[in-house]
Image (cartoon, rainbow, N blue to C red; front, side):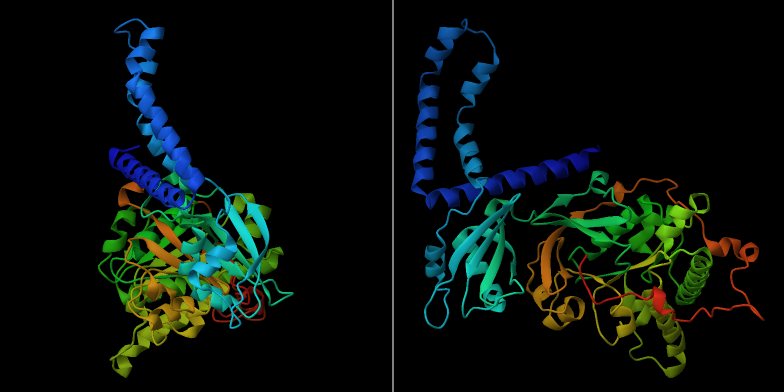
Length: 478
């Protein structure tokens, strides 16, 4: 492990520890029993330190060096460790009625929610409340106050489908807040087949399965960490054996560290040519799957392990540069419409073919990213946005506009819920050169395969839209 990576990990560990000590202090001042315990520990340490010479003289020779000598001279660390231990105490110690009363969280009749259940699932505690007259939206609007009142971090609110009067509040201890710096290590890479990880939320790793949800849109203003998050996801794809393609109309700077894995395209015509090639590859694969009785890339590769096809990932750092037609003359718009058409086809049909797009933008706009593309990007990740409209475009709500300016802090949407997480701090030095690609491209063997048949035989136009392979966006879970 290089020194810079070790330094980052040590820094992150120190931050977690001292945040825990601070949370332990907060928890202690609210609990007389913890105050008493802390006083006794501190007094005990004082007595031991005061009598250290007597204690050591009873058991060891004068001047003898041993571990107990070190321990006694470091005895004053014990109160700090005690505070950290308080922060790790699990369970919900705050009285619910008292907590609700402290923030005046009640219905119009002045009734407070009544706690009726508690479940413990690992570090997560799920509290159930009878909540007449208070909707999930009411609970969500008071989330920050409820977190303070209950001394916890709230992961989500849930209303069981069979009743409108019960609310479940999913919580984790306040000491388990989000880190402000998560150093990347290849040990973070998921062992699951083509699952990539973006960072950590309150419950653990944030994972996305590209087999189910093939494309991602990552947005965020300058300084949000958008490009870092994109490169982290892209590196995992390369490590897992994809055939990579890169488009960057800002001179290729963002992907310069990846150039050993493939060409970085910086010209619009070259990008259009690439998109056309990927559509041809996609249609050839779908045709091959029909003839071999397989449904998708994973199934085909399992059935024909000696003729494996490569999974493909196309990454673009600023999609608006490819698609924004604002202010252009009609003649200049033609290539933009062609690019839009090719990308729309890939977005709709390429999941089964194992072709994925990771697209990033600073300025999401419905006029730039048309519905046929946006609606088929099921993974939505957003860093801080300067206005609510941009957040709505990506997440379907305004929460990205409410994010702080912590570098690497993002939101991602799952169904009706939006989750906050800290992205990994990925560095170009984390990239390890090598030949990782697994499988082949059909375009490389086009003449020999004779996949596309014309004349009297069956022919598949490259712009057909067979329903069997379209993305189903009815469910947005990841």
